[in-house]
Amino acid sequence: MQLVKKFQERLRMSADEFLWAVSLVPQERLFLAPRQDKWPVARLLFHLSLYEKTIALPTMRQWSGGAKPIVGTQEEDEARENQAWNEGQGHEIAAMSEEFKARRVEQITLLAELTDERLQERLPVLWGERSLQWVLTKTYQHTLEHTDEVLRAYLWWK
Image (cartoon, rainbow, N blue to C red):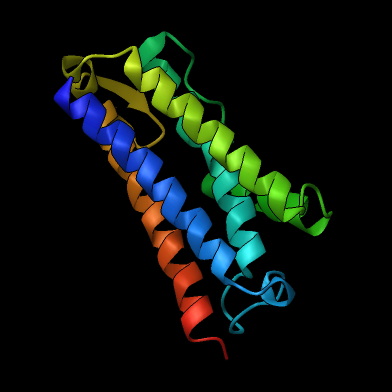
C-alpha cells in the first residue's frame, strides 16, 4: 500500500498546487491569453477539468472493472473540447475548480480500493498497454505541466 499512498498524496498535492496557482492570477486576467500562443488560465482549468472527467478517471476505473473510455482521435477530441470552450459551456472559475477537485477526490478514493500490486498490472488503455502506475504518473505529469503554465502566466505576464 506504500505506492498507493504515494500516488494518493501526489494526486492530492498536484491538484492543490494547480488550484493555488490559478488563485494567484488576478480575476481580470483569468480569461485573457498571457501571450499570443498560450491559453488563458481559465482555458487551462477548463482543459484539465475535462481531462480528469473524460480521460483520467475513466481510465483509472478500468482497474476496477470499468470499460475503456470511448474517445476519438486526438484531433477529434481537441475539436470537441475547443467547441465546448468556444460555446461557453462551464466557464465559471469556481464551478470548474470544484469539478476538478471532485474528480481528484474520486481518483484518490478509487486508489484506496487497490493494492500496490494492482498498480503494476498492465491493461490496454488510450496510450497502449500500460500499468496503472504509468497512468497515474501521466495524470500527475499533466497536472504539473499545466501548473507550470499557470505560474508562468502569473509571473511573466506580457
